[in-house]
Amino acid sequence: MDDDIKIGFTIPRERLQHILTTAFESGIGYWADPGESDDIKWYTATRDAQGNVTSITFQPARGVRTRTNCITVNVLADAIGRALTQGLIRGDDHDDRDGHYDAMMAVTRELRDEQDAFTADALVQYALFGKVVYG
Image (tube, rainbow, N blue to C red; front, side, top):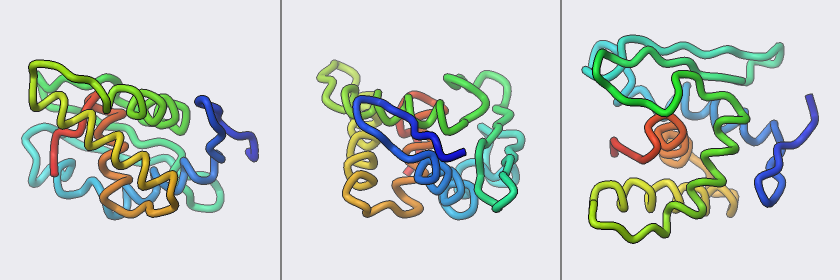
């Protein structure tokens, strides 16, 4: 699948899969590990034939609110688009504002080719929770 995902600009599907792979393999373990987390019961990844993560599915604990339970490349692309605009929100809730801003900063680092486990983690959190909650 070489088609790109468009969100006001083009992000190659391969790049989105790289973000998911980085998050799954080294970014999200500190908050999503069922042995360490009270918020996530389990999570798993679906991979393509080349080993790239194409989706991450989460089972949140009871009472934990998520936007979705499955982060795909399309869900991640939507979250990136939202992060670019929502990161500029000025509201009364300081934690929400910080969570949006952290996601916006992760996107800008990604767009400058500075992607790492931190940015991948922040983008998956934003797609899952609607803000960066951990870290």
